[in-house]
Length: 151
Image 1: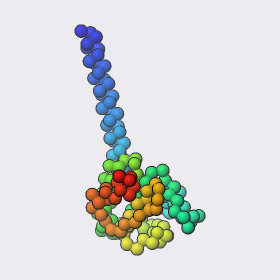
Image 2: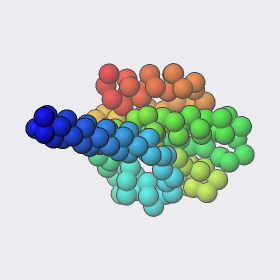
Image 3: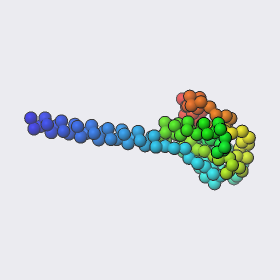
């Protein structure tokens, strides 16, 4: 009987540890947020277009989505919480960056941003793809899966 109780107690303890680990992984995934980028960060983390103006070379270690936005832009404001949700859902599989076009005008100009929001999808391999305008969450997910994750 004592052995049975000890085994049951050990099983309960082990189950609790597994549940705690699962909750930690879930919390770690949902704690991911969008990341603000300025020009200096962009040159270090995304692409050094100043030193390599002729060739696109992505510097990141996982695919990225960059939102070029402005704080006064209505569609940008509508897109912002969707991007936060996607950052939490995709966790550490992709980066979701945000570039404020008012604060980083030279960066926006370098990419020919004329309309906002503009989204830049950057896969690990191949050329980036640009999309103009706010998209519904389902469309964004489909593009992330197809362009960035190759699904």
